[in-house]
Amino acid sequence: MHCPVCGHDCVTDARTLFAELPGRFAPCPDCMGLVYDKRSPPPDIDTAEPCPSCGKRFIDEVFAHIYRMMAAEGDLAGTEPLAAAGTPLVHPGYAMRSAPYLPPDSLVLLTRSAGERAAARLVAEVPEVRGVVRTGAGAPGLSDTDAEPAEHTLLAGCDVRADVFPTRAGPIIVYKQQSVLHVEFPRGRDEKILSIEREIGRHRPRTFVDTCSGAGTLGLAAARAGVPHVIANDAWYAAAFWTACNFGVNREVLGIGEVAMHRSYDDLRRRPVARDPVLVATAAGAQEIEVYQGDLRLLPAVLPPRIDLTALDLFDKADGRKVEEITRVWQVRVGGAIFIP
Image (cartoon, rainbow, N blue to C red):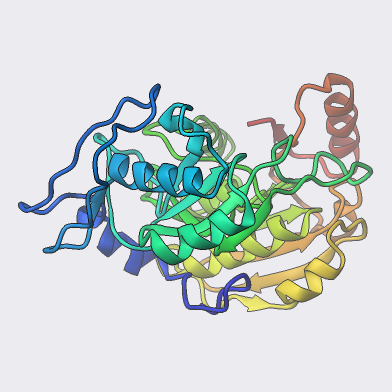
C-alpha cells in the first residue's frame, strides 16, 4: 500500500506480515550482542556493526549507536543513562520472550531529546531506524470533539508501524501512525480484546459498533470473531483513516472483499476533527464493514435500526459523569447492549 506519510510501500497485508514473523527478530548463528545497563551511559567501546550474515543487530547495540549520535549532536550530554535516548517501538510489535535482534528499518524511536539534525542522521546512518518522533506533553489523539487534539512531531523518516494482537480466532494486524495515535503495544494478554470476546460470547451480536475506534483494534477483533456487521467510528482523522486501512490489511483473514475508501488521507487531514459523521470506507463479503469519522453523539443518525452491541471505549474514562451521560443517551437513542472495555 502507498504510505501516506513517506510515499513508500511500507504497509503490507496481514498474511505477508504473519509469514515474516517467526524469524523477524531472531538472531542467526553468527549474531553477537552485548547487553547494556539501561540505567547507565553506554560503555566507552566501539558500537557493533550489523551482523554480516543476516544484517541484524541486538537492540542494545542499536540504542548505544543512537545514544552516541545524539550525544555527538549535543542532544545528550553523555552522562545520562542509555534509556534517556528514548523509547523503542519495533515494527511489527508483538509479545516477545527475549530482547530482539533488529533488521533494517524496524524501529521507530520516541524521544524527548533528539533535535532535527540528530533525527535526520539517525534515519540516514542507523539502518534499523525507520523514523524519529519527538514526544509532546500528552498522548497523541483526541479526548473530545471540543478539546484540542494532541500530536507528537515526526522529525525524520516514517512513523508508520504495525502491532500484532492475538485473538481467540487468530491474530490481527494493526497499523498506526505513531505521531498522531497513542501507543498500544501488544502483550501476551490484551484485556480490551478479552472483554470484547466475552461480550460477543454473551450477546451473539449480528451488529457491533465501536464508537471510538482508535486504529481499529476492537472492530477488527469483532470481525475476526465473526460478527456479521461491524461499524467503526472515530472523530479523529488519523484514527478513522487507519481503522479503514487496517480492515484492508486484514481483509483476507477476515474474509471480506476489497475495502472501498470513500475519503483519502488528505481529505480527512483537512478536517482533522469531525462532528457530523462522514463515511470513510466500506467493505462486503463474509462480513459487512463500515468506517465513519464523526462525533459519536451524532453517529446514531447514520446507524441501522438495530444495534446489538456497542463498545464505548472513550479516550478519557476518568470523567465518570461524561461516561455516564454518553452511555445513558446512547441507550435511549440506539439501544442494545453497551460495554466499556
